[in-house]
Length: 181
Image (cartoon, rainbow, N blue to C red; front, top):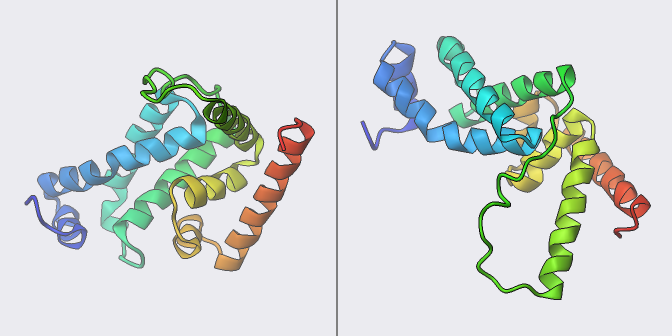
């Protein structure tokens, strides 16, 4: 069952095959965890939400109609679940999950400046409204095309582009106000 396509695994999963369900979820669990982490900025929240998302996917797998790819559908479930979470509770703040990894490159003024700009940018992204934050995360961090983001968020490509543009404008304004740009 190792080299079976998502489509074939999905067919088996919808018939109740637990191994197929497990394999499907295993293919996307890490990717969705990192996406949710980028949205929440908190490892524990991301772990809990990822678990909730895959429970929801498991329960609703029989309702998947195949109008999009399975990956897009899982991202849609993840996005909606995470946006609901963020609307109910403000993010508990970023933690130092990635900062514990040692940087093998030597320190340089350019790298320090780049890291400082990255920190300011992450803080600015945290300030964005949840939908703008989702689009920026999907477009920039996950590198998804607008068409797929539109499917995930159930909106038009034009709306996606406009929201992304507004988010970038807001990020520039935030960074200028902080004298970063």
